[in-house]
Amino acid sequence: MRIKIIGLSLLLLVLSLLVLINNAFAIPGQINRNINAIMHDVDRMATEDPSKAMSSNPYTYIEGNANYRNIVNLGSSALPVLVDMIKNSEENGLREYILAIAVEEIAKVDLKGDNFGWSNAKEFVRAWNKHLKSVPDSVNNITSSEQSNKAKVEALVKLGTPAIPFILDRIEQGRIELAPALGTLLKGNNKVDFNADLVENYTEWARMNRTKFDDLRNIVMTVNN
Image 1 (cartoon, rainbow, N blue to C red):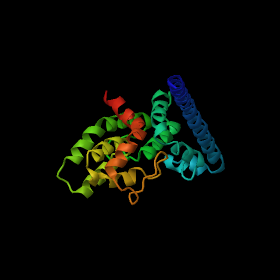
Image 2 (cartoon, rainbow, N blue to C red):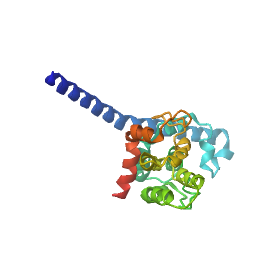
Image 3 (tube, helix red, strand yellow):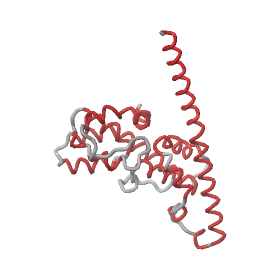
Image 4 (cartoon, rainbow, N blue to C red):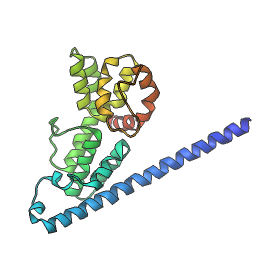
């Protein structure tokens, strides 16, 4: 029996490693296929409508674009890949800018609106890292402040999805008044189905689901180490 248990454990470990390896190659491949298709669409649009070729608004090229949506739908697992693609690219143009927009949408942040001041993709990477470094302290400062619960929730939501694991830490410690922030940050999440009306015990829910957001915690902590 002991040998069977060990064998099963090894099998599960191998399967887990295979999944991780597959994801490591699958996500970059999916991003590249979709961003290449977007850039093809840009070239086509420029040919069909020269006025669009002169547009200085990158959002013109992704509005209603299924390939862009495919990138966003990859979720938080795509965040470090997208950022690395921007950082390692020799270019700093429209392609990289669109990838930066995807990072912001996936992470549910508006770094320009938060005065990080990025105007191109390379500047975005610096703003992104600066934001990630601020997340743990920001969550701590917000949750320990004298603000109303509503103001705290609004401030936590502005931190975006990278703040989720740190918010869950507080909820697991009994700060259930912060749970409404999850309603916004987990909307459309492909890992969990969070319905505030159906959760009977927020503290228990946080404890049971915290490991599902280890990737986000690792993204933040990697920058902070």
